[in-house]
Length: 107
Image (tube, rainbow, N blue to C red; front, side, top):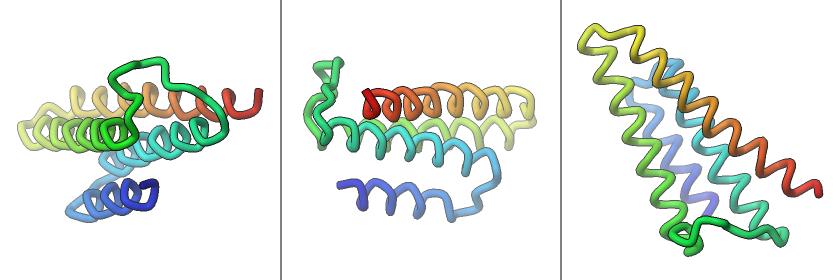
């Protein structure tokens, strides 16, 4: 499942990706991978809607694609400051989730 998620993220990032897209997809991918690793090491998913692995991974992949789309649309429409804000928020949230997952694995 992790390989599929990573492959989809990489495939999505190759089509005219810029640094913002790469940062978004990298943070999203880190969250997906570290979540799965933490769960396999005995962690638990607090969100009942995300307890099914397929639902969890597909939801996170879809969220990553939607955020990249929003980033690209804002840039294309001349809203570069808002586009940068989307990148910052996505990286902080998904990166923070990945760090949380790594810390949870070390307990």
